[in-house]
Length: 75
Image 1 (spheres, rainbow, N blue to C red):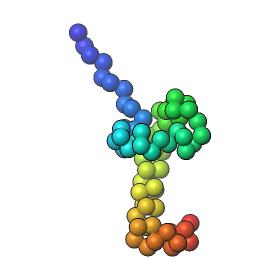
Image 2: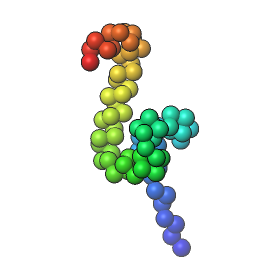
Image 3: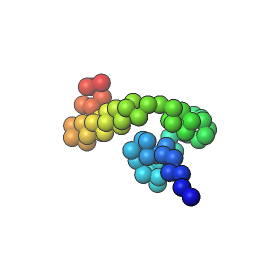
């Protein structure tokens, strides 16, 4: 009997751990239910999610290196 591979979870698609996902509660920040948020995350192409994650990491690095004021000026 073949076992079905487990579906990819929303936090895996976002490139974070399960504990990071539940600690951040991104569905609350987005102002929607967890089910609706996860439905949207699963519908977005992986390339888009990867680009968003890379941009957020870059912004975080700029902020840590140069400070929040300079990072805001660059936007």
